[in-house]
Image 1 (cartoon, rainbow, N blue to C red):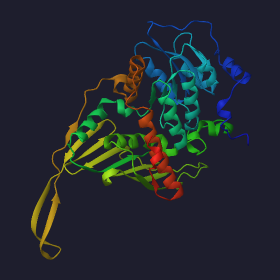
Image 2: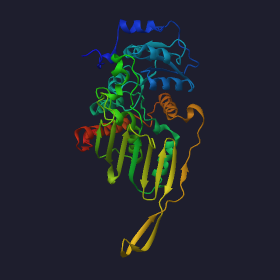
Image 3: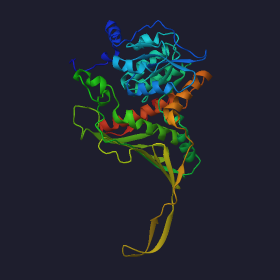
Image 4: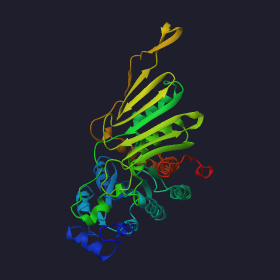
Length: 407
């Protein structure tokens, strides 16, 4: 393999080189100090993957009582050094995640690594007896997803998948609005996750390209569907109470022709039971209306953007007269009713973050031996739906939900 490409093996660097890399940045693989624990019931957490997402989680954990970040793992020492500043006194740093999992006093781990590593790291964490917070999308492919379901069921451990909107009070209100019939019968959902950027991160050393920009390569990533659209696919599955029955779609590398092999634009159409259609779009050339959803029902439309929503009732005014020269034709003019905001009381700081609520739920589930709302079962159906969408676009063929997907 060429030196400027990182294989799956490169992502699992171990041994003396790892230890020397830590030492160069003043980090020790085995600090002498004991971890600081304010209470005996403090949950001790390890983070595997300290990139942007892992760093954000490390910062957030400091805001949650009775939780201590006691171990971090990443291949890049600079990242480790940065995130270790947010860890508890005496926390340990690792480059081999398997060494982190050997730590007996770690209760749970967060897996915030490239997608292709999720399954193996999840399996290893479960076998080590750790509760798992697995970032979305749950797995790299469908067989891995099905395998994880079976393993978690037999583990007796908490497994939380990072579709954090299932834990966020705002989306509970959205769910309530839909399931209580405020929109009438749902017939369509429209979702978009649009940006105006290359989605590329700067790389000072070309040899680090695939390690830093792993999202742009199929070897490691599920592209826009897995990294962005999976949130909205999960919301649709939740609201409709079912996975999709089939999906078709188109995608391409039509603008950012810079060596990536994942699509820079995707447009898919899912069908759910009772014929409900859900469109999912993501483009990297225009950010108008950014991240948004529209849930269309016979009585109203629920317009959602970020953490705000408007309920817009349907009103039709019927007029009889002459339309286009045909006497007696019926003309309907649409006149929307007054929009009603869907609001949930929020607080400043971390408590306005969906991720905050997801981790609060995760820790509560560990303490009370229960599974979270976003669990391995829901994570499985969303992961499969994501992979079906990618397959539909890549193969230019409709993909159907198969009986073996429903475990």
